[in-house]
Length: 613
Image: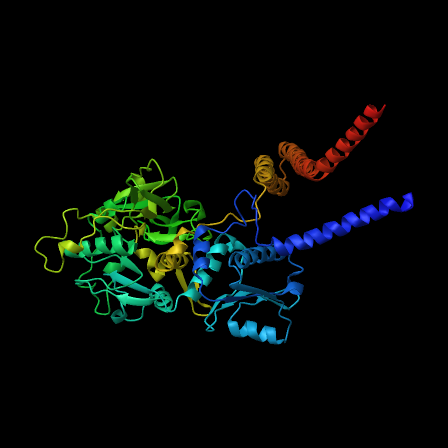
């Protein structure tokens, strides 16, 4: 073989071997994954793997994605890649039970008809075309579950939504949810509120009579501002928690909804201002005082207040406040993606009791400006000024909602209430046989439509807060598949350059401070100049000498020109700082690595030449 052909053939052979090996590895070792990302972006949770291990029949996943329409949106393309990789991870892990197909629905095609029939949400584009980006799942008996639209701002819930889809298809019937409440939201109290309508649409809802002597067989128990409970009823709830393991309790020290007048103009006969669960919470690692309410002067909702002078003004009301994303857990699926905030009305506060084998996760808290108030004072509806007069900030944010998990012990260590023929001591459970999941929220009014629903005659109902989203998330995680409870929020794959952003914010804050000072000086000088101009015109009409005013006006004009020049210089400095920051960043991330490789190559070549010499 000619020496001149040796090198090209060797390079060509290596290229063919590389491509063939890459293709072979992609087919043979497709299910083998090594996730080295910091937050395990491509590693499925144990709960997801548990649900996939339970799959008894094939599931078809049809991923609908309009490639051409999404081409002009880089953010959607990037998230579509993330979704596609996640779907493939499920398919690879399922051992062939999840059959994944990606479909690009062309306009006016049979695929687009299938998308419309399945109920996927179309995204309008600037070109007028429709973009589809969703998932349709079916099992062997044609049960169907849908994710209408993959939203980039919901990436933290992506694994939860996909795993819940599998769980829903694997369950033959809707889960049963038992509901105990003293609030006037039962079907015999007229039109149900938005929360009850959503609940009835998603679950087989079983209403519990306030005088219950037994609890129904249900996947979960929801206790919403309960009536006054005797020891036998508390014992039933205690044993349900230890045996069934899933309870949600929404308590309230100042429930406005409970006292709302009915059609007859009177509050319900058994209305209670405050609710409690007696000794149960302490066994669940939590403490709650029905005699105190939480408030927050920094987060207060605007309300109409009639002042002492008789005028109506909008003021921030500390007893009714909105907890935003900063006050929520970013590690829990239920709260990770909420961005509108959750509105509360005179809620209570939850405290954590350190118990062995019990893990408590705060879900929602006040800000660092939270404070407590006696419930009797709150019942008198004090105005904002009265609340702020003796406002004492708590040492740390107050917990409004929490999840408690662990192996709990009974709140009745001596057995069932004595003398009650309904219970047999032989059936008494001392300790949970498996981990229990309890969610407690210290408010009931947050589920009142007035706190999160806006009714517009033209636009209809709209949600102005995340109250409904949060409560349905909590119930879905509790009443749904137990494996879903172990799922947690995932860190988004697109990670912000936090250090660069901090540098940019520092430079911008420095610029804004100087800019505001200069603009204030310019505005003051212009106001004074306008007054002097008017004074000069008046002096001319009266025939008086305005030489002093003219001199001052000339000085002001010179001052204004100087300040504007300073302002332009500050703007130039700010742009120069930002450009320098970007150039520095580009050098270290783009220019430096290849330069380092080139230098290493040159150094290696020089070293080999020196050794030969």
